[in-house]
Image 1 (cartoon, rainbow, N blue to C red):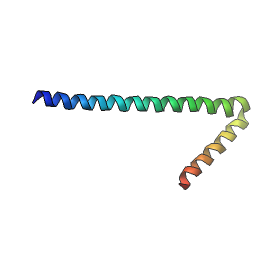
Image 2: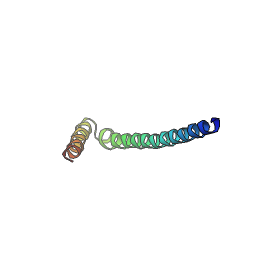
Image 3: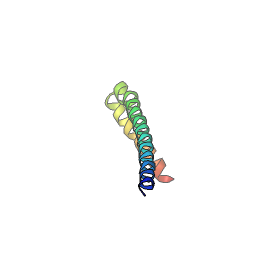
Image 4: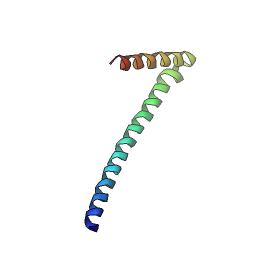
Length: 67
């Protein structure tokens, strides 16, 4: 009985650790995307870049809403 419970718990822990790793990679990807967008639109162009970034974000949001 204890062996079965320990095997089930081990499988659950492995699943959670793997899921955590995927989420961490996604989080890192989003962080690098933020840095890229900030340097591309805001840092190089100032206030005008902020407006351009907002317009691009609206375009992307509209594109996803249409699908």
